[in-house]
Length: 225
Image 1 (cartoon, rainbow, N blue to C red):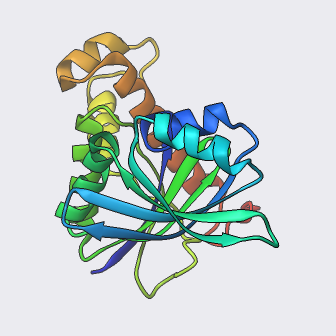
Image 2: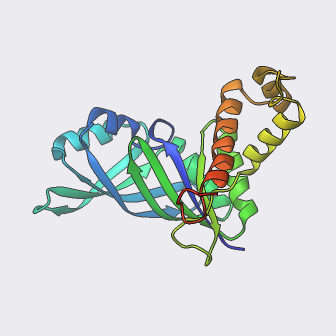
Image 3: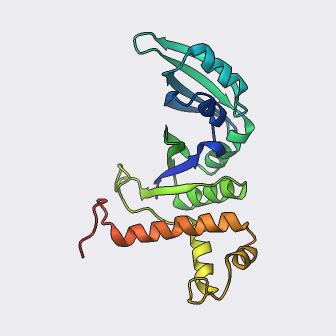
């Protein structure tokens, strides 16, 4: 069944990290995301609270941006609409989404993180896309995942991705959660053939999802029982 998911990625591992670091007061909002083929992604982005010349200098120097073109200017709000063409580093993330059938419904930036709202024809395609992205060294946090038509506002409880499910299941089987522990995090990471840091983050995210299922009801309010 068609699945809608909400993913977050840190700015440092996705897009416009250098621009946002150079211009800390910069405000942006994504108008739309255009994909031309599986590797070419060209978002339309409004920029404000910045001098335009400084903005263009920052975009020119940003390694995640190959090209930028100003399309519109809103003089009353002092904001500018640009079409960006991302570099291959960002394109690899987008490529994983598109090649597994994903469609970007929305993209937002806040508090140093990108939030992508995506649609996939099948849930396993989402899992495959997330696995491919993480295998390339980019950390993805799946915040929400629901079947389309059940809850378009994504208020349902988040679900584990396949890499998170595999990690937490293996940790349980190997005695990582026993007291005392039967296996260290380093040994478990070797068993799963991933880095110590990647496993630590994967388990932390999985534990947060499982904890949220226990303390929150589907509306997001704290359970009273």
